[in-house]
Length: 300
Image 1 (cartoon, rainbow, N blue to C red):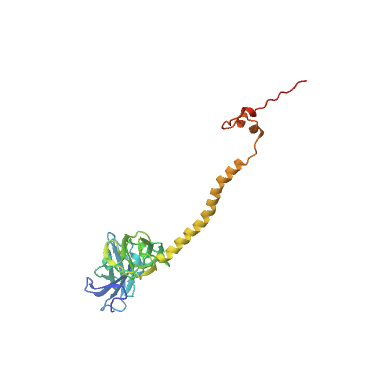
Image 2 (image 1 turned 30 degrees about the vertical axis):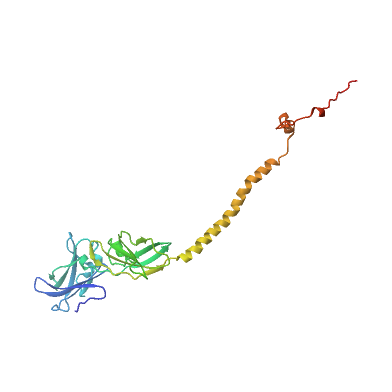
């Protein structure tokens, strides 16, 4: 059987030998935390069967339930691993007879074997603030239920790097690296120039081994609003505000004047007419004595 690299899978092919001299060629393929073991034992009988076991650091060897006494030459052991911070091991058992099993030298499966698919990004713009949403590829693992996408970020907490750059001037860019502890990562940027096209790309890496990193995502671009569009909008807003404020201001200015006129036009009461103080002139007027006439009333 010929073992080769398929797509983005990393294939680690090793010649492994059993205690009795049995020779097998084995390879581990890894992509997005998937672990596929393939092997070829050239001198084994076509009727030979195999068993695969896995071991996590600190635990004993355990059989992979779906890869016990099988005649195929491959086994997907991805669901068997749940902790990728520890060392994981795989070994192949060759059943030479019903009572005789030869175990090959174990193979490791750790962060140095990991490769990842690129994430996907989407962008949203509000004024000069850009938010980049990063979604991670699906992974195969026993902690994920069947029939749904289980993002890698549910199994590990990757370092996520997002770069936003000016499409017309690549020397203008901003870059953020965050430790993702959520299923989806949101990274925000500000201070973008008006009327420019900005694109966002992202990639991520295994938290404790930066060499195990994904390729960059496809860019997603957005254009910021230009000043020529913002100015009419601002002017329109000011105009509408003025139209709303002018009637209110007019009512406010008329209210005191109306109150004054009302007080002046109030009817004069009898009490105010009979008030002696109100009949006294504010300033004395000179009177000529000749103008004073005395009349005496006659009493009959």
